[in-house]
Length: 395
Ligand SMILES: *Cc1c(COP(=O)(O)O)cnc(C)c1O
Image (tube, rainbow, N blue to C red; front, top):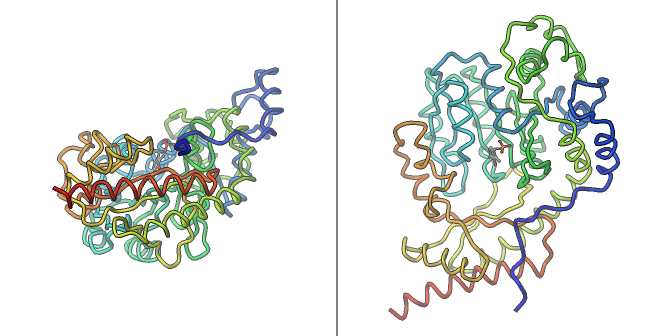
């Protein structure tokens, strides 16, 4: 039998980054504000905004930093309540705590999307903002979310950290909320090791976020788009220094032209495995909602009619054959299980999300994988499930 494919390695960085990086190493020109307006970070912002069809972009040190700056720019009072889906990465409630606000978690259904009844019930007058995490690229009903929030004048921030390339009703993810935030951490579609970027069409918000990201004195003049809101905010805001540096920007820029190809290959890989898993009695891969076109680099599926013991046995079996599956709610200290977020205070009662996390499995499927790799992974999953289910039949 062939070896299990490595699903964690990243893709090589396109060679065109090398020339720019060696120039920077020779000149030491690493800080975005040292030289002219056209620093690699400023070029990345202009190119990313253009790709997304947004007026403004700001590159920062992480998606978490982008979320934090978004909340600060909304000028939320201390302890303001911010809704998030209960299925997200710990960095998201952390950004809310960092901004001195309070996360309110809403239920997520077993299709990994926001439970709209719970969302609507919790969207009361105490809610000052909403962050929608498109977790693992799964898009919730953005039409319903935007209609409910617009009616109440509640700003929506999109956490599109892991969703670059996804569209909803032909609109780019991250362009429906007032601000969209993306990550360049190595497991995301564009990999610069660490880094993030936010987009918006709002001139006032971008001026605030640029200044707070660390455009001290008049460095905002070196951003691709300059307007009068910068003068207005000059000296009125703290400087949090969450900038991106030129090396990371050169690495990220070289991958922008790769996005369409990675989206196509990632979706092909996902749908190939999803079809095979859905043909078995063991697994269920939820469908995307109608308006969504996905850009996955991993697959999530639910175990069907597995007990806790069988679920654990399945995870152990996949580990034994080097094809380790993470069950979000059963792997110890998982950062995507809301009951592990002790820093938010009392654990909320969210039985639907909890039940989903106890059976939802996570396997990376990078766009670079080829059909034999996908077959290997699929067979490993099916064999592991068969073993577990047959053990029960024998016992
Ligand atoms: C990766 C990720 C983040 C955090 O991004 P960083 O750039 O590491 O801060 C936030 N939300 C989601 C949904 C993510 O996948």
